[in-house]
Length: 579
Figure 1: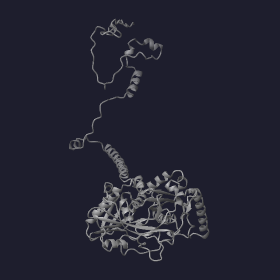
Figure 2: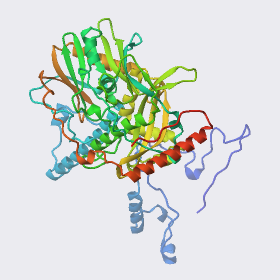
Figure 3: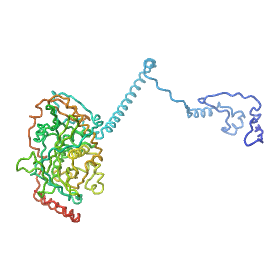
Figure 4: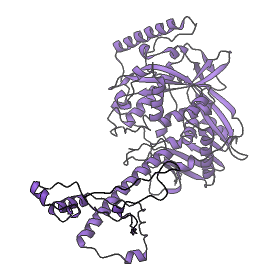
């Protein structure tokens, strides 16, 4: 059988086929060929197959020339079935929209078999659980975003700092999200009403202390530290009688209010409305007297108080370290800066710690003014011969395995990493210290880094280094907005000014990011405090004589090395530790 290819016409006008191509006669040239339209979803079959090989020569000889158009054989059927099974339809149409829920859709459902209905119910239940888990994760993520200091694994069994009595009436419930939106600028600079107490000069030799030449932390048992609340302060009582202001507080109480959105643990403040005046107080033995440790960290501390790394034990240890550090970094040569009046809380013959009380007044508006007792811990002479006031605080390391950063290795080379870790784990404590320095008008705030001599020894510590910051610069570094701080105080004052005369308590919720204000009885918190001795594990263990001698030798050697490295700057040295 011959196959007529046909003639290929020559295009004399250009390149390519001519306009009317010639169709060979074997393909039906000259005849009318009907065209059958088809859809893209139609399956196209074969017309002829010349690739088939017969089973043998006899079968090849017996095969007719029309067998290429015959697909009725068994082999062809199997091949076609295999080919059909691998065929996949490709449809470019958009998927149909799911039906909306409504009466028409609900009553037009087709009846289904019971087994299929059970399977679909189970599938829907699993999808609902996945969706619920997804929403929970999204809620926690949003909560962390809006409250950046939220600890995701905060124990739901945490108790409030004060027992909520059934006869208390809740008047206000304020979420932290409302606090973050507040802003208020104090129109005028604060006015100094009175300076009390006396402070010693800061020893600049501690600025050169490093982990390789650490100083042992000393104990100052003979010096008394006073944590007097607002209404027990005789100076504030005198100012209230003289009608110097309408709102009275201390710097620690104001700092707790100003940094409320950063707090995690529960705390409380007692508010007393007397006439047209407000007094912000703290209870005896309040949580505000202790310093928190790892409050905003992701890892939760043990709840057992007998554990030396529990939250309560670390708070007692941090408070003890902070007090001793603030006295050790001073010149103890008798030279002091005395103020207008002596320490209002120390009795005659009693040795008070180096603290200056600065009573300052802020005018919030035409009718409300605020007086606060602020603290400075040391004085310093600047290069121009002027006098500066400093606040002294200490951060403490208890176990590098828990914090993830070893101060003794990182403080020399990666101080920024150590500070960043502390800002993450102790955001509320650092913000409170900064707020107190801003309220006191301090020119510099000194942060000491104190570590245990051994992770399991919570009695003996060493000073690794001391860093200094200007309060305004450090506030900008930790994203502490002064306008927001005063906005929180102003909003709480405005709320309490609407209350009637009486006693109220503001409590931070132990789990949720919110505060509540309760109305309490006038004699609440007055007869429930009984002074008890500290447990044995919380008492300071006295050192042996040989250990004290070793500590003195270590401090003397470290001081000699530091003075030698200073190159003879003529600064005063630190005296030998006092036993």
